[in-house]
Length: 303
Image (cartoon, rainbow, N blue to C red; front, side):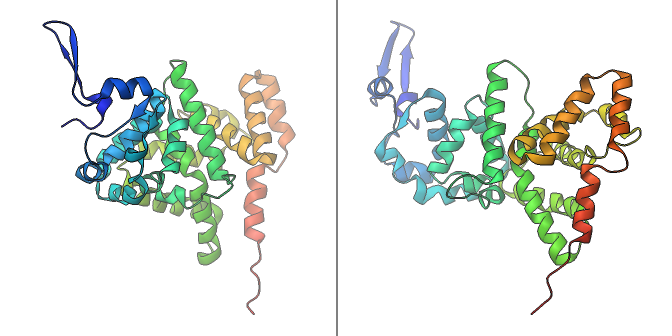
């Protein structure tokens, strides 16, 4: 009833021997992940085995043998029939066990990422250079490093980062089609994106609440005039919001990167320097300029 040969060896406590009935030792020596029995039959019994094959290969630095890999792309759609709650737990094992970046690359190679994150997969490009793809690389690399360093991780931060650019793409469409203001578009898009995502992965409400807070901070962090900067610094989720802003700066450069640098300096500055930094902002800010840009954006006349 075991799935892979390397997971089907038995230890005899009577004589300290290993019983290997499926060739697991040979596959272990060769670094191969191999299903026991007919791969297509085994995947249809439990499609999550496709995810397990990828996870073990990434974590143990092994290869999926040709026969075990062959049916995966054709059967990847079967994951849509797996309960969303189970897939949420699997997603954490895949992306938050210290080998997330390598696992992500394998998930894409075998077309297994799309059933888990359909909204994100729509942003994929052949060159893998879209903002979404750059952010995925950044956040998973950061998560892997934090785990290796023994630091705490929060699934909500990863999901907030993964879904940010699909969220913004949807918000822009709402502004164009429904004439929403930027803030209203982001709020509506956040509801729509999360509603869609939880159909695939049942992200618990405690995490979706944090995801929303991190997203909302991205709208608030540009507004630093008066006492706003001090108040933002005191928020419980400020650090998560700032860390995400820094990642956005790496992807977007320009004003976003400058805003992240400003907040980095502000956090480490003394009281007088903080006041001087706020005074230098004057009556405008990155966020205000952005809102004005959207407000004044003119639609093209219909032909």
